[in-house]
Length: 138
Image 1: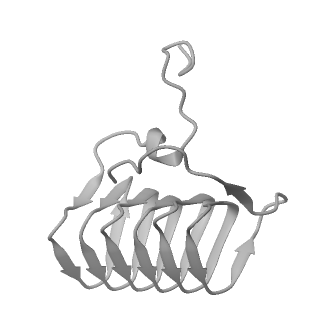
Image 2 (image 1 turned 30 degrees about the vertical axis):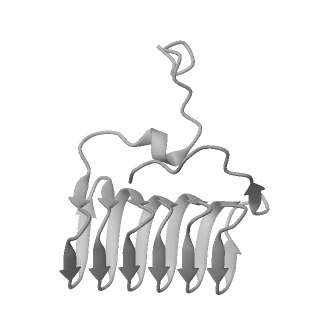
């Protein structure tokens, strides 16, 4: 059955998480290189480079310091370092990214801050949107 038939359209990346994600919760600090198979939800702080083989969700109060590569990402918090996303990157209105950003598809909410080069590897230009609902917990 489709999501629309169930009455819950899945338009945002935050809505598309499947399975139990690896969780670095609020108040948690991790230092070092991290590799995750599947989705990851960051609510705390990571200092170090990482690879996420699934959806990376960075919550509003979270911070990733280091370079990170993910299959897909939804960022509402801070990233200090380069962010490379294989498919879709959604940058929420509360996001602050200081580093280069590269993704196949990039959607940026009004109010988001990106201080660095933005490169779209797909055929669509950067999509700008007005975020109309409260940020989802990531």
